[in-house]
Length: 380
Image 1: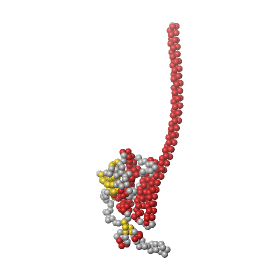
Image 2 (image 1 turned 90 degrees about the horizontal axis):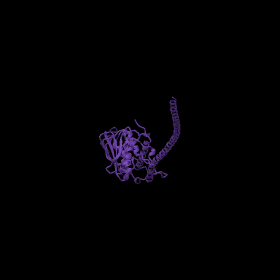
Image 3 (image 1 turned 60 degrees about the vertical axis):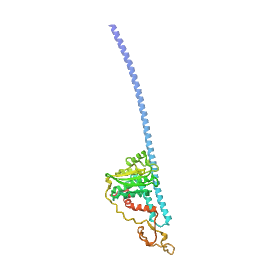
Image 4 (image 1 turned 180 degrees about the vertical axis):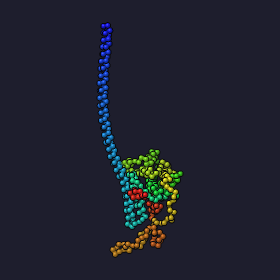
C-alpha cells in the first residue's frame, strides 16, 4: 500500500509540475500577446496620424488646385478678351482708313468691312457666352438652309474662299436657326484657319433618309487619329472642358459646337476625308429641326447697289460767306443711284468690296433670323 501511495504521489507531483510549466508558458504567451496588442495599438495610432497628415495634404492640394484653376481661368478669359480686342482694333483701323481715304465723307460700301469685322467679333463673344453657360436666343421665324449657311459664311474672316451650293426646298425651324448658324460658322472658320489662304472650302447639302446633312469640305491638312478622337469627344458634348483646360490661347470652336449640338439635338462629325484631301465636317440635322417648306423668296434681278458717285466729278458745292460748304438737298440712298445716269458719272467699287456687298445682300435674311435676341433671352 505504501508503494502505491508513493507512486500516486509521484504521479501527482509530476502532473503538478507540468501544470505549473504550462501555466508559466500560457502566462508568457499572454504577456507576449499583450505586448503585440500594444504594438498594434501603437501602429494604429501612428497610422491614424499618418492618415490625418495625408488628409491635410489632400486638403492643401485641393486648395492649390482650385487656386491654379482660378488663375488658369483668368488667363483663358484674358486670352479671349485679347482676341476680341484685336477684332475691335481691326474695326477701328478700317474706320480710320475710311476717314483718311474719303476725307470724312460716308461711304456705305467701305462700311461693310466694319460690319464684317463686327460679325466676327459677335461670333467670338457669342461662343464665349455659350462656354460660360449662356443660352442662345430663340427666333420665331424659320429660315432657309441656304440663308443660314450664307449667314455663317459672313461671320468668318476668309468668307470669299467659301462656295455654297444653292439648295432650295429646305428650311430650318426657328429653334434651330441660331445654333446651326453658329456651329456652321465655327466649322467654316476652323476649315479656313487650317488650310492655305487660297484653298477652296465647299459647302453642299444632302438629304439622307430623314436627316439633312450640311457637308463642309476643305483642302487643309487631314487630322491624325489622336486629333480625330479628341475632336469627336469635344463635338459630342458629353464632357465639356473647363475654361482652365483651354490654354492661354483658347480655341472655343469644337467645345462650343459640342455644347450647342448636344443641347439642340443635332450631331457634328469631322472624321471624314474631303474630296480635296482635307477634313470633311458633316452637320447632321434630324427631321425635328428642318422642314421641306421653301421659304426662300424668288431671286430678284441683281441691282447695282454697290455703285457710288465720285465726289470729285460733281459740281462744286455752294459755300457760305465764311467759306463753309452749304448743306444741300438730302441725297437719295445708294440703292436709288441706279438708272439715274443724268446726274453725273458713277464708278463701281473695287472687286473685294463688291464681293462682300453681294454676300451681305445674299445673307441679309439669314443673318437677321440667326442673330440672337438681346442678352440671350428666348422668345416664345
